[in-house]
Length: 163
Ligand code: GDP
Ligand code: MG
Image 1 (cartoon, protein in one colour):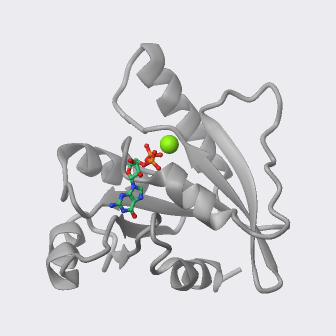
Image 2 (image 1 turned 90 degrees about the vertical axis):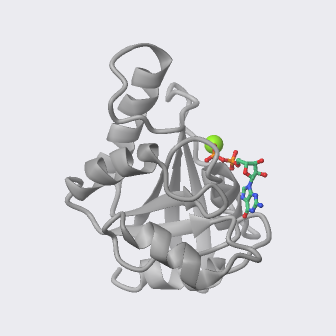
């Protein structure tokens, strides 16, 4: 079985950019299933001989009660249930936000390993970014730049190590 890596985080932190980066292999397959809503995307990635499944979710608002935000939250809940490991993405340029705190509270109950990933970290002072996001309670954040490809290989190797 391929380990399933699920990307969660508020809108605009760079989940889809990271998804594309993680599934950009020579023989990447887009594994989206017809009938599933467009708010959950499946892809296959490979590092060395290891294949893994990646699930991208739309922006996640764990307190949304109705409408499109509620549907997105429902999709994210289903994705969490499918996860072997969760990547909780935050935006290093925006800094920690109340919405990040809400998502953190939900992920603490997920019963799955969570890695905190600070995206858009290119050119940022690592110690400052780390101090800000450390408060979310998932340990030292892993800085990456999904857009530039920095830190991606290290991230995948770390995340897949237990599988
Ligand atoms: P999503 O809503 O979480 O899926 O975020 P997207 O992947 O759509 O990205 C949101 C915005 O952030 C886009 O304008 C991306 O180009 C930008 N972005 C994504 N990754 C990076 C990054 O590593 N660095 C910077 N500076 N911008 C990024
Ligand atoms: Mg997206």
